[in-house]
Image (cartoon, rainbow, N blue to C red; front, side, top):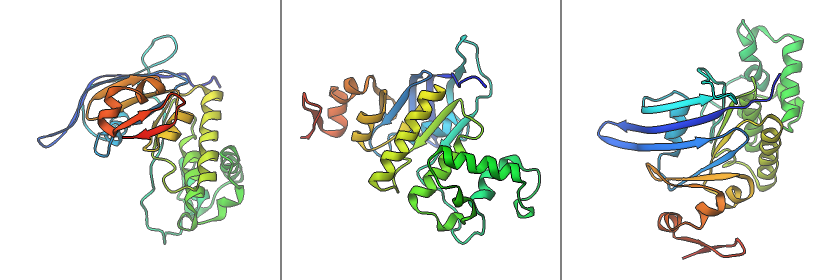
Length: 250
């Protein structure tokens, strides 16, 4: 299978909720192989933009996907890792049930064929998780285990675009490093574009290849460095960056 190569073009995108305009005339481009960090204060519309890309909310404007030849991709495969998964933690659903669900025509309580479990185990290995997790119930997973399972789920089938919405908020430092190393290696291997929502600017500086500062509309977009040292960034966060790249709050 060819590596994923998809570019996203967003033009004049607006989202309203009642009389409130959550996003206003957003223009943004994300090219294959990029990790675009989407940053901004709480309520800036970052998660709303991801929901628009997923087709979960109505919007005005245009979202278009293109292959390397410049041809439109009408139905791209989009992987999504949310900040957290809201569910009843007493549910008896296992990791195997979750990862095999998309490939089964029968209810999960009928069990899973050997090849389906092997595929699920392979996915867990791909994201650095122990295949023994297949037997565990979702409600018993740690934060790091859950995020790896969600990443495995988002990567099958292989996405043309990967969306990460504060994906490591419940993960310890070691787990954070591992998670982003996995995402970076997969971006390099498959050349899929990644849009990362993060409030941790150190993660943005370390892992993103470009950045967009959002506050209901795009205030600044470009290289991570250019965005971080921009007047718009200082106005939103009160943040200056020293020449050596150290953060200095004013």
